[in-house]
Amino acid sequence: MKKPFFTTDETHQIINTIQETEKTTSGEIRVHIESRCWQNPLRRAILVFKKLNMHRTKLHNGILIYLALKSRKFAIVGDKSINEKVPEEFWEGIIKNIQPYFQDKKICNGICEAIRQVGEKLQEFFPPVKNDEDELTNEISIGN
Ligand code: CA
Ligand code: CA
Image 1: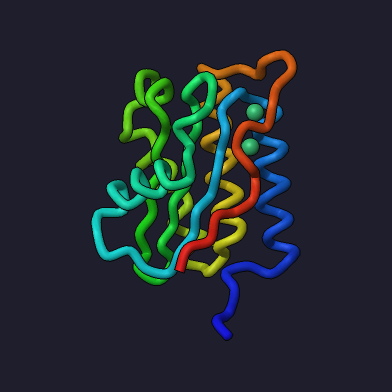
Image 2: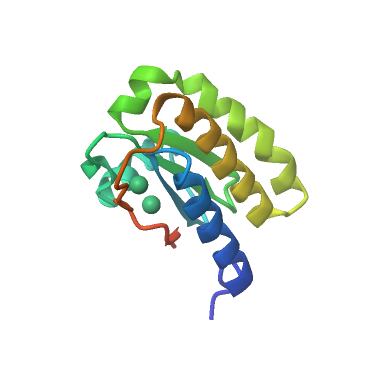
C-alpha cells in the first residue's frame, strides 16, 4: 500500500487550521495534495479548482493551495473576486515563504503556515460574514 501523505494527527492539524482560519474571513480555503505534477503547477491548480467545484461559493472567494510533493511544485489559486483584489505574485510570495518547511520535510507545518498566511491576506478583503456557512469542506483533497 502507498504511504499516505499525512498521519491522522497531521490531517487533523491541517483541517483545524483551515477551520480556525475560516473564522477570520468569508473566504473558503482548500488544500489539494498529490505526488506528481507533469505540467505548470498553476495550470494544474486551476484544473483541480474547477474539479472540486470551488467556483461555486457565493462571494467567489474560494482559494486552493495546491501541492505536488514529489515534483516539488506548488501553486495557490483563487476565485475571481480574489483575483480582482490580490495580484498573483502575492501568492508566489507565500510559496517562497514556505519552501524552507518543505526542504526540512516539515510538510504539515508548511501547509498550515501557508493556510495562515493566505487567511491573513483574505481577511483584509473578505472579513467574516454573519451566519457564515462552511461552503467548501475543510477536508484535504488527495490526488494520486
Ligand atoms: Ca465560510
Ligand atoms: Ca471551508
